[in-house]
Image (cartoon, rainbow, N blue to C red; front, side, top):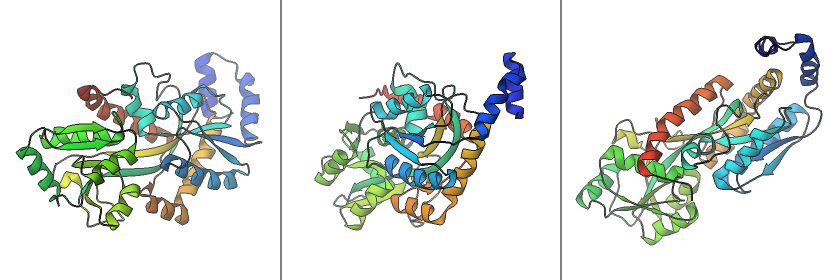
Length: 325
């Protein structure tokens, strides 16, 4: 019996002998395929990262890790299923900043608590957004964009994949911290927002690097800056927004979660194997091409990240009165 199980037995007043079968059961894990819930449709970045992880994790654990795409309600439908699953290690979920932090403030009746209703296991990836303008615009720097917005208060538009999305909130934070007044135009998905940017219907937008790179290389859009704390490894000459707007930062992450009460031995094994998978040079290189970076954490570090994100995004969402579409 682990120290974790002993402490839990004392807290619950449960005889320690009654937990012995649970310890033995955890040692036999995994004895059958594992389901990894990806809370978004196939083909998107979350799905691609999930499949990359599932392949490596399945080989390491000796059992297939099967992707189960459960889209809907901004990823919260899939994560709700994870929260309600049996804590036996055979149902896991690939959550994100949006599902575990931002959605808490977008939905009036979210069916789960991002901390209490999950067992945090490990981060797998981190990313920053990038700030884009149409290449035909006479805007070459973040300073140029701010100057234009100051000259035309309320007339400069920015688009997003929808109200409450990371792209939308990135723009709202930029507006607030740069002390400018711009107008948000929500679209039904990032592709529609990009189409509007290319058509000149909006002036700027925030998007993930993987999508923006091809358009920038073709000369159709111009990437002004990244939103992370530090410059991107792939583009060391690209400035951050914070170099013009001090302390501005928007970053996101993907991480693996289990249902609440997942036995500690299973959590430890998963955390260890995820660490090995994300340290693989081929995995890291594949993620970089997609615009993401490998990143791992302890369960405690992941919980602290969620707490930090809740504190960051709560005031922004409330200030904009953003609600899920």
